[in-house]
Structures are given as C-alpha cells and as structure tokens.
Length: 203
Ligand SMILES: N[C@@H](CCC(=O)N[C@@H](CS)C(=O)NCC(=O)O)C(=O)O
Image (cartoon, rainbow, N blue to C red; front, side, top):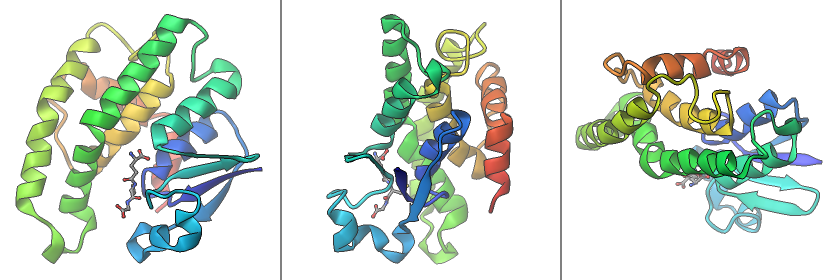
C-alpha cells in the first residue's frame, strides 16, 4: 500500500507526477496546509515538520520531496527516471538538490504572491525578491542546457521532473522565461509531457 499525504496543488505534485510517469498505484490522503491539517497531531506523528508531502509505503514513512522522488525513481519504473550509472545518479541528485535549494521556494513565492494568496496578503517586496533571486540560478540552468535536451544523460529523468515541477510554479505566476534560449524549450519539453499536461488541466 502506497499513500501520499498532501495536496495536489502543493509540492505533493512533484511526487504525483513521478508516480504517474512510472505507472505506480497510490492513494492520496488529503492534507491541506491552508486549513491547518498539517499541524494536527495525527499528521505531526508521521511528519514532525508539519509539512507536506509525506510518503507512506509498507512501513516506510518518508518526507522531503526530493528524498521521496529519489526513493521512488531508484526502486521502481525500471530506471526510466533514474540511472544505474553512478555518475549519472550523482548528477541526477545534484540537479534536483540545486533545484530544491535555489529554485523551489522562490518559484513558490512567485506563485503565492502573484496568484494564490488573497490580494491583501500578497507582498510585492517578497514577489520582487523571489523573481530577481531566481535569475542567477536560471542562468546556470540555461548555460548547462546549451546543446542538450535534458539535464542528465540526454533523456528525461527525475532531475528534469523535479526541476521542471518547481519552475512550473513560476510559469503559473506568469514569469517570463523567453530570454532563456535553452531553458525555455527544455521547460516546454518537460511540462509538455502528456502526463504533466493532464495534471495541469485538473483544477
Ligand atoms: N523541503 C520540503 C518543503 C515542504 C513544504 O514546504 N511544503 C509546504 C506545502 S507545498 C507546506 O507543507 N507548508 C505548510 C506550512 O508551511 O505550514 C519538501 O520539499 O518536501
């Protein structure tokens, strides 16, 4: 039994996308941070951080979205999102961790302060800082993607999925990627995958 605790509009979507790409069965236990479900004692008992997502699978309880996606991609799906080459494996982790450290919160802030929060709670200064703090990291990605279709191994891996899912929050906030000649087509390639398009159609 595989249960993902979280909400599809939140970072939980990184995990749902990975499970769908690999055709894994799962159940969702809805935990909505906007209504405080994540701070209830029963949820804190499985994730003391009070953050979503959390994966529960045959006695394993695992939190932190990147750890969850590494676990799933490494153990399921016949390596379609992973690699058994140790160097490629390390690069998959490198780009995913680069994303979670440098892109994830900034992209979420763009979405929150542009679209999601009620107007009176949006903070223009936070939005501006998030938008401009993304730039040096987007440049690094753009340079890396020169002459490449994907981040690692010239095929779509969990690294592309993780980083593209993070940047999708910025896309949904209207962030302009058009000046990034390599990053923009890569982002279109990843977010244009049929499974992701379908996920984004569900409101
Ligand atoms: N580094 C964590 C971040 C998790 C996170 O911040 N989740 C948000 C929702 S997307 C949350 O639970 N927020 C609730 C709160 O801050 O109270 C991960 O990647 O799993």
